[in-house]
Amino acid sequence: MADRQPAAPDNPVSASSQADALLAEDISRARDRLAVAKARGLGSRPSRWRAIRLLWLLVGPGVLVFLGENDAPSMLSYSATGSQFGIGFFLPFIVVTFLAAWVVQEMTSRLGAVTHRGHAEMIFDRFGPFWGFFSMGDLLLGNFLTLVTEFIGIRAGLGYFGISPIVAVGGAIIFILAVTTTRRYWTWERILLGVALFNGLFVPVALMTHPHWSAIGRAFLTWHPLPGGLNKNNLLLMLADIGATVTPWMLFFQQGATTDKGLQPRDVAYGRWDTTIGMVLAIVFGLAVVVATTPLYTHGISGANFRGAQFAQALEPFVGRIGSSLFALGLVEAGLVAAISISTSSAYAFGEVLKQAHSLNRGIKDAWPFYLTLLGSAIAAGILVLIPNAPLEFIVLVVNVIAVLAMPPALLFLLLLVNDREVMGEYVNGKWLNTAGITVTALLVLSGLGYGLTCVFPNLLKGL
Amino acid sequence: MNQLLNDAHKLKDKELAAKPDLVRTLLEEDQLVAFKKRNRFPRRKLSVGLKVLLWLLRIYVIVMLVIVIWQIVLALK
Image (cartoon, rainbow over all chains, first blue to last red; front, top):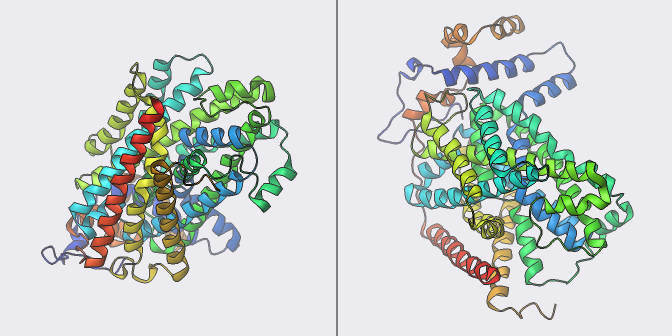
């Protein structure tokens, strides 16, 4: 906050802060803020035009985090859901998981706009390195495993078109390198937003299957059917779907991007719109995947053990070559956007903890540890995917579940931070958001515990 | 004001850098990199109850992770 004096006792605010040297990062951010200030100053224009212009300028981190979370393993998880259960329980269930994600991401966006600091930095500063390193451990493990699955998705998607794995992975790494080294947050964000919109490729595929709209409507009203009832496998799939929507990297990414973009407390409402738009797009695109793969269920083709492009191949009789090609391209997009978002979240967190430059407004020479983390993690994950006999199947199975399990401690830190008046001032959480945040945390813990209990006691849910 | 912003909008990065007062007007003080480097948020005091909750969640993560990995290894075998 502008009037906050957050200095530690041994590190008082200098009276000479006005004399601080301005860095290129400050200039780039000021240029972005100049556009926002100009849009706010459009006094002679109708207020609706002003609001649209401001939304265009301030939208970004929220849309990117949600479309980034509609990543390759998430789309494969939704595909498995559609092929095993068709239209039924999981449609409204997925919407609820996205609503839970909105609650979490709104808090993250607000925290970034008010503090101008990344998530890792806030945890280390307020809770100390002991708890901070635990959070970092969860984040980096989850991020690396997820990155591997993004490259599996990219490889599989491009493999559908006959592109060799080494060309697919190499091409993806070159693309990531090109997008992330523009030296301008704004350019990076706009390119990524443009690419992320191709997440919508799943919508025409879903329409090509001629979905039964009445069945979709009935599923939302009744939450039925759930073939097989509540058993361990279904519980694992539910966990995977939650993990496809609510994950720790999203917190670190959105807060880091909000800070890098230069959002201020007065932009909080626009940050909320940004998050809402991202959520709505992600819901539509995610549900489209379930609907698109429902013909596999209705024709008795179980996709439970399908990997990557096998879904696209299996869909060909129902949606034709064009439809299955769009599905495969959608997987590539999902993997690419997520690979960039996830490696950026690792780089933000690393830079914040190591107190090194951590901004996309900096050049490689100026912020090499940031770019080394970003590109190094992407390259390492890409190479792992190319190693013969690497435990990729294990990683695919475990990645979303790890995300769900790591989320409750991350949510506790988030809730503590957004309720901290010393940090948030007048922007602390209200009653409703606290209730929603605590409910989401409790549900995540309970679903994880439920899964653990059914593993230890396999007959626990037999009677249900 | 609009004219001032319009003129400023046409400035190149180097010209904008030459107007530090304008940059400081556009950014909040704690958005400046140098300010953030010098000023950190102080550590908050953790109550016993909060420490217990943090430990419980940490134990939960570790136990559940072991269970999940065990189950997946069994499934893959």
